Amino acid sequence: MPAEAIILSNFPKNLKYLRLSKRPPISQETLAKKLGTSRKYISHYERGDYLPSLVFVLRLALYTHVSVDDLLCKDLTKKGL
Image 1 (cartoon, helix red, strand yellow):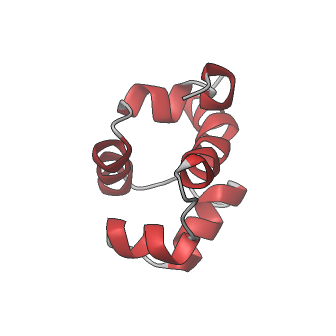
Image 2: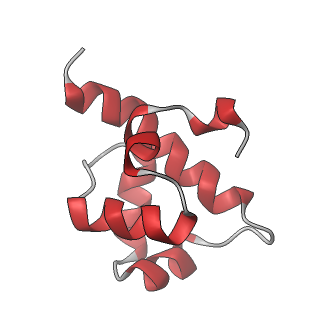
C-alpha cells in the first residue's frame, strides 16, 4: 500500500480522535490556534482532503505527546489513548 494511502487512512481519524478525546474536547478552531494553522486546514485534514505538512504533524505530535509514526501509521482509536 502506498504511503499516502496509509497516511490518509489513519491520520484524519487520529486527528479527530485526539481532538475530541481531550477533556474537555477542543474545537477545530482552538486546535488550529494552538498549532499555528487555520480551522479550515484542521477540517480538511480530518476529512482526508489534504496530506498534512511535516511541520503540522510535528506540532501535533508535540502537543498530543503521540509519536509521528503513531499519528501517521496507526489507528489510535483502536489503541484507546
